Length: 115
Image (tube, helix red, strand yellow):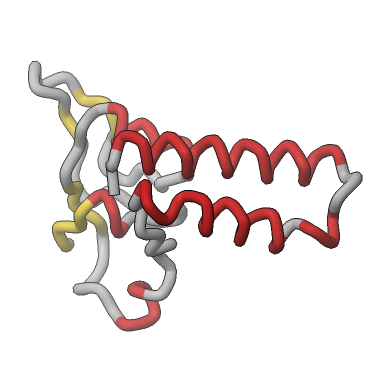
């Protein structure tokens, strides 16, 4: 078991302990496999860290985190980079929707400085 900051979580990790809110209500059970949606909820619940099953973090796991610097001064560069990465799939409705959602998420994170 290890204590992992929320910024270092990624889908597929498994909770080693239940996650409780301030009132003691269990919000996530021990053994819950994290998904992107679950991690987003942890951010909504102002979680700082959780306990994850397994040994201490390895170098391979360190590379799985996104590592975006949500600095508002870099927002234009980040958005341009996203547009560039999605250039080849222009016209694909689903991927365009994913791109726009990602851009809105990045804008939100930059504005609220929640890195």
